[in-house]
Image (cartoon, rainbow over all chains, first blue to last red; front, side, top):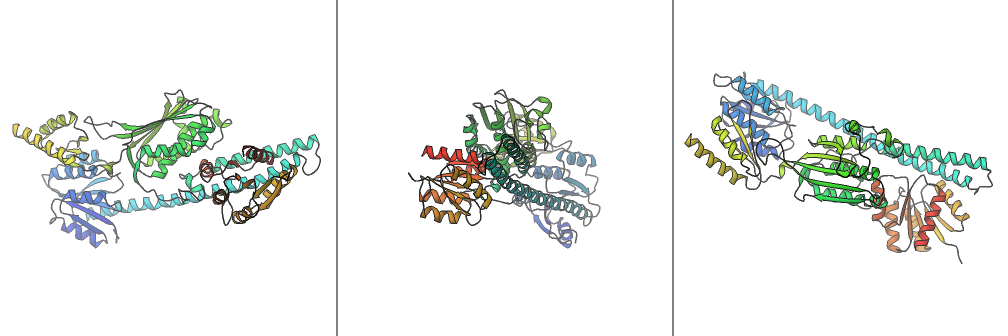
Length: 463
Length: 122
């Protein structure tokens, strides 16, 4: 069966009409959940990370599909669940409007003409679900392989260094005459044995650090965090200020040894939704790099705060920004993109600072996986400043709501009201469709929506 | 004056031999143990001034042994000598009360110098 055990949410304003779709899905083995109201279904979807797909049955109401797209986006999903919209062909449905609304909404929302209500959306959905599952399976295999490689690299490094300790030890004892007298020439040879062993140890260390996102995995008992194998990312609310402080504490000894100063300026309310251990790894890599490349007595500054986002309204969707700046030599502008590539090390640093050149590529990968961006430029302390931008925690919103209309002129006036600076309100028109989604965030979202609707209703009456 | 007692703990007998040769030549009295559990029993029986502890050992690892030794007598100087190189390991060593931390491969002369430093501190 095409949709075996797939968990599909069916969203519609016409539950009776959607019955045929639900039956078709279940005939293919899916577990279909039908919501009487779209809001219920999308709310359930937000709490069901194992949903395999969403089928939106929009009927022939031109306003309904745009509204449902807006709701799908408003939930704040990262786009990893395929959303298929089934539309009954009729004269009332504008093909151009659907196409542009889909284009604006972006993947994975795809609209289909339900030429056959029972077959077409099912086939599209099955294909989309199968694609997502295949990708997920492939990703899991890649992750497992990486984990195995990481473990192997770490083991080789550790055991290799231990054996080199034996080589160095015997050579040093011989060199120092503990096994009988040695002449100058023999002493010189033995010193070279030690130097070569040190070089091998450095090589092993570089390759060991070309590994995991979890430094804690390499630390033994007894204290937390516990050793952990590479595992699927677990997302949760992450308080950025606490994370920064914990990373600075972890690297305290290294920083003190270099007589460096760390200054922090943290917005305590900043929360992101992400994999805490992976984000910790990012910060460990960046702060330890900053310490490594900053001269003795230098300064490292870490700041974390909200960044006003793009889009309409003074308080449009916001992002979190964390900046790690140092007073080191900085990164030449020509290298500011290359430094994030795996294995890349600046020629300037290759001999003076040991390292494998993968710390920044790990940061780049993790930040990308969180929907964010990392970049480097000249910083305020005279050295480099690494900037990480991440979406703020969408799930942290207390409430969210949507206001819709089919009257473009009235919408324009409503957007002007929003632009006056209602906190936590974002307004977004959807392509050429005659609808707009207003997304209201925060604890007072319902009150905000009610107030907006009341003002909007007054505007409509006036027009 | 009796010789200062230093205990060496490592599951690699060659690593023990190398340090024992070096430290005996400097006049220390040496006890060697091949795992943390044996080391703990020895510490209770014959208190060393300094313990040089490997980390990756069977039965009881170096961090666990360090923590227990410090509970027995916090004046024992503990030098963690390990092939682990992660920055977090230095952090954990400090968490369990180690007094010094060195990574392998280490020149036995440098290890001896560190032991001398620990003894001078106490």
